[in-house]
Structure formats: C-alpha cells, structure tokens
Amino acid sequence: MIKPNLLGAFSPGKAVTTHPVILDAVITILKELGKEVVMGDSPGGTAPVKQVWQVTGLLDLAAKHNIKLIKFGENGVVYKQGDGIDYHLTKDYWDVDAVINVCKYKTHSLMSFTGAIKNLYGLIPGVKKSDYHKEHPDHISFSKVISELYKLVNRKLTFSIMDGIIGMEGEGPSAGIPRNFGVVFASESASALDYVASSMMGFKPKDLEYILPCLEHDNLNPTDIEISKEWQDFVFTDVKIIKVGVIVKILANSPEFMKNAFRKFFQVYPDFNDGCKKCRICVDSCPVQAMKLESGDEHPVIDYDKCIKCMCCHEMCPYSVIYAKKSWLAKLVLR
Image (cartoon, rainbow, N blue to C red; front, side):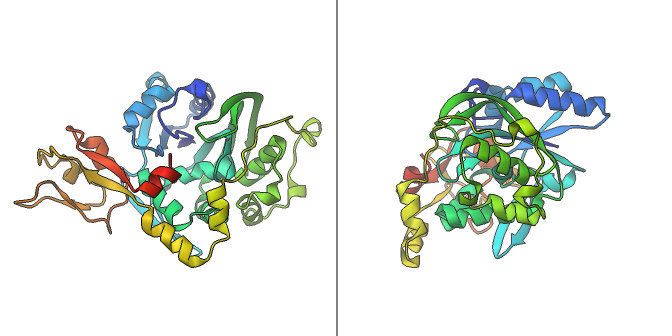
C-alpha cells in the first residue's frame, strides 16, 4: 500500500498534497517488480473523498495503473494503545503486506514541520483526528500522540519517500507558500528522513518534540544517519518558518483546568441539517454501527460513544443533510 499525503481537495500545484508525478513513478517501479499495489489515505477535512482523489490527480492515476483507491475507515478500524493513548486506526493498514509512505516536504503551523512521521496521522479516519487535537491541544502533548502512533505502526512501514520538488514554507500544511526546493528524500527510516529534511529546512530537530523519540525507537542516533557528503551540512536559505502559535504556546504552559476548559469547548462531530429523508443509507454505511433509526425519529440517532468520526455518513448521504458540526473554539483552531 502507498500512503500519500492527501490533506484535502487541493490541486497538485498548490504543494499541499503529494504530487501525482512522484506517485506515478513509485507505482511504476512497484508494478515492474510484480507487486500488487493499492493506495489509501483519510483526508483531513470533510470534502467527499472522490472529490479529493479527483482534484489531487489520484483518480486519473489509479485509472492509468488500474489500482484500487482506499478511503481509510470504510473497511473498519483497529483499536491500539500506546503509553496511555487510545488510537482508532484504519484496518486497511494491517491488511496489506507492506506500506510505502510518500509524504510532502512542508512547514506546519502547530508542529512546525511535517514530513514522513506526521503523514502517518492519516491512518486515523476522518474527523476523528480532531479528538486528538482536543485531548492534546498543545504542540508538546500532541507530539506524544504522533511519536506513540509511530511506535505502533512503523513495523509495517518499509520505506519513506518525501516529495520536496515543490514543497511548502510559511503557514503550512495547507495555507503556506509553494517553494521550489528541488529535492526528493528517501530512507528506510521515516525518523531519519525527517531528521535530515527538517535540518535542511533550518529547524533544530531537538526542538521538534516528536522526531527524537521516534529516532530513539528506531535505535538510531543522529550520528548513525548516513547521507552523501555533499548534503551533510546543506541548509536551504531563508525558509519561511512559522513558529508555534500564541494559543498553542499558552496552552502548553497552562494549568490543567485551562486545558480542561479547552477540551470542553472544542467539539467536532457529525450532525444533521433539516431535510433528512430517512433513507437509512447513512445507518447502513456506518462502519461501526453507531447510528440507528427508529419509528418517530426525525433523523437517525448517532451514538457518539461509538462514532469514530470517519464521516462516511456525510459522504454517503444523497441529500447532503449531514455535516461536520464545529464548536466556536474548533472553528477558531481548525480554520
């Protein structure tokens, strides 16, 4: 399985998602080696996944190579735990023999940098991702979410490739400025790749809270990482690096009662507009059977304790009456 970065319905030229030219090359090589290839992700927003595939160029690419595109979560989830954190992860990841991680070279407004390790956050289906932001609202605690996730899934990960031909600087991962870095990184170790790539962008990896724990998990020291001599001290000039936001910094150093207040008022979940036709398509499409419709109900009732926020109900509704409802704080943070 190839795991690209499909953050949302962005055209390739915007440098938000993995460019289809890179993916085309990877698929071609794998098929020449006689491999059966599938490609999957879970976009971060609520745009229908087919729209994301279309706009990012993956629909045409899949047709060209006759490969299957998978929306994570539709085939069920696997529950894992890492150091006290409960994860809802797509079952598809465990149903394949090997995974190639094809990420994008970008800055990130919350985590400063996003690359191979952060790309694995897409294994969490749909807007369920927002729950981890809610429970871990600052960059320090969210770094633990990322590093513990990596420790759970990296055995399946065989190779990582980073598309940095046209990367992003500034207000990444989606609102930044495309920049011609003109590089492609590749490594058997996602943590080693991120260490080198972030250093070349001008970051000090010790300040990126999640990379060093992942290196340690891979039994690597920075001095163990081998790169060709001409790149060993290379740093791109004047990369626009956006520092961690003020709200996030305040939360990182806030007492627990302030973080609890954040969690209380930060909400994202599927809900219904008026106009439900009671067709039951959403009920039948829910991969975890979190919805039911009984006589007298105006629309299906969602069991939010079961709901994994994959937004399959939103996608499958033929009448567009289901949407991702956000509290005022979620609108502010996730804008």
